[in-house]
Amino acid sequence: MMLAAYLVAVLIGLIAVVAIYAVLSSLPGAPAYFDVMGITPIAALVVPPLGLFIYFLTIVVTGGQTLTFALIAEFFSLRNALLHMVFGAGASVGGFALIWPSAPEDMDPERWVDIGIVAGAGLVAGLVYWLIAGRDAGFRRPVPDR
Image (cartoon, rainbow, N blue to C red; front, side):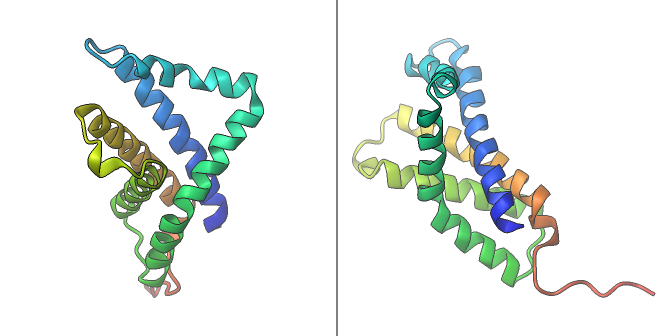
């Protein structure tokens, strides 16, 4: 169940990234590349291998962090939705840092916005993961009341 939840959460997280960029591109003073990020799903639909590449790249760069967080949640039976959302945000920001290794030297305000957008999408992905697999996390089950 964890693998299926992760794959669905990654897909929903990618959709959330595009939706957030699309909404933010309508704000005054938004950087021009926000418009491009808002229309990238059209490119992914026209060229399906591009969409699959982005999907699998996201799986590769967030897989390690997500596996670590999922095992922690399972081992300690952590079933809190907010905790899974924070784990999702952490995994997505960690994946973003893997793609963009020069982050410490290149911290202009636009990069902070990108990190916030990716973290917001990770929050959404963490919620989706919790809805599918996180609500029943853990090896120990609660004792039913008689």
